[in-house]
Length: 136
Image (cartoon, rainbow, N blue to C red):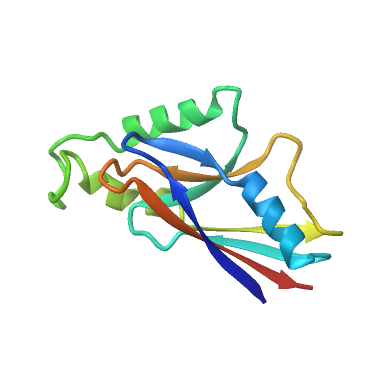
């Protein structure tokens, strides 16, 4: 298995950060052919999504998360910024992992699919992401 970690600056607002280009560069460095790309976010308040980006879907996802998991005082987990407890619930809906097939060195994503880090935690502006390639 070939593996590395990258740092992603997510800033102080909720964000959907597209990791697809980083994943493609990683596969090139790994000399990937056929196998699996596993993406892992070792954080308790971030997740991964495979979605379309750039056409409003990323903003729609953040709006849906705000509707589903409001940033208010209902959460028992109360340290950090107001409503931070919802950030700890996020990975139950958007898991901290994703696995994508790799065929002939390329991600086998659909036409409009991207691999995205979803971070709603405004208290943690930098995230680590582990990329691992498992040859077939």
